[in-house]
Length: 432
Image (cartoon, rainbow, N blue to C red; front, side, top):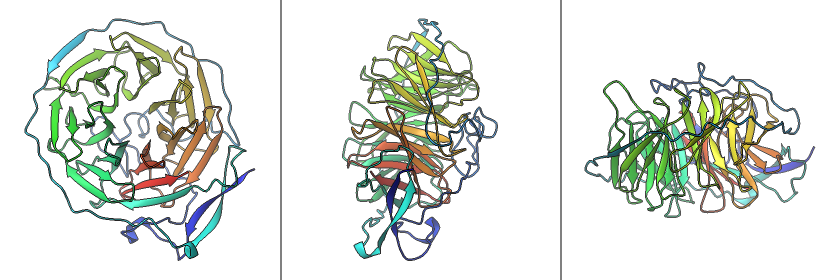
C-alpha cells in the first residue's frame, strides 16, 4: 500500500472552535455521520439538509457496498428512451431593489514556519501516488457562527464564493483566506448552491424562498421569484450554467427542471417521472443538462429544447450531486451505496466503491487538468480524488466531524470545499 505525506502543525491538538485562525489541524480518521435532515422543511440536525438523499428518511443508507481496497466497475446501466417534449411555462420575473452590504473582514494566515511542519503518513488508494505528492489542508473560519456553508464556486474575480444556508448570506474568500460576507436581501431564503454565470455574476438558489438570486462581485443583489401557487413551493436545490448561455436549476419539491436567462426570464420544464426529487445538475459535453433524481433513483438528461431521457440506477444508490468529467462523461456521488458513479452521454454506467466504509460522498467537481475529479466524504470527514480510470485517493480533514459538503477547483490551482457542520464553520483549502 502506497504511503504519501501530509503536512501537520506541531503544538498540540487544536479544535475549530478554539481558534479564530485555523491552520492545519491534527487529522482525525474516525468516521462520523451527518445528522440528516428534512428536505421538506429545511431543518437539519448538525449540518446539511439531506435533500432526500442523506437524511435519515431519505434514499441513502449510512452504509453500503464499500470497497475494501480499490475499485470495481460494473456493467452498463439500462437506458430508457423516454424522450418527450415537455410543456414549457414562460415567466418574466420581477426583480426587487438590490442591496449591498460589506461586513467586517476577517483574515486568516495560512502560512506556518518550516520549523513547525512535520510529515504524517496517509494511506493512498491509487497505488501510484508519487513521493512528491504532499496534500496540505488549511481551514479558514467563517466570521458569523453556525453558518452551515453548502454551495461553493470559483468566481469571475479570482476569488471563491460560497453560501451560508443558515445565516442567509453569501460569502467571499480570497485565495489568501480573507472572508467577506454579504446578507441575502430576499430574507430567510436559505441559499444553497451557487455558480458563476455567463454574465460574470454569481447565481444561487434560495431553497426555501423559491427564488433565484443574482449577485455582482461587489455585493449588489437581485432576486427572481419562481412562479408557484400558495400551496406549491418549488424548493430549488442546485444550479449550473448551461452551454446555451442560460442558468439551469433543479426544483426538488415540484420535480421539475428550471431555466433562467441572465435577464431573469424563467422557464419550467417537467421531467418524465412525477415527484422525482431532482437534486444535483451539471452541463454535459453533449450540450444537454444532466441531473440526478432521488425518487426513483435515476440519472436524467434534458436538452435545451426540453426533451428528457432518464437512465435508471440500481436500487439503493441515493444519487446526490453530478459533475462533468475531463473524459466527457458525467460523474456523480452515490452516498447510499458508498460509491462514485460514471455515466457516458450514451447512457453506459460504471460504479467505483470507496475504500472507506460509510464515507457518504456528497459534492463532486472536476480538478485542475489533472484528469481527475474531487469529491467530499461527509461521513468519513475526508476529501476524495478519483481519476478517470477509477483510481481513488482520500485525504483526512484536520477538524473532526466537519461534514464537508460542496467542492470546487479554485482559481489558485487548489481545491476548495465547504464544511457544513456548525461546529466546524469553516472553508477548507487543499493544495494537491
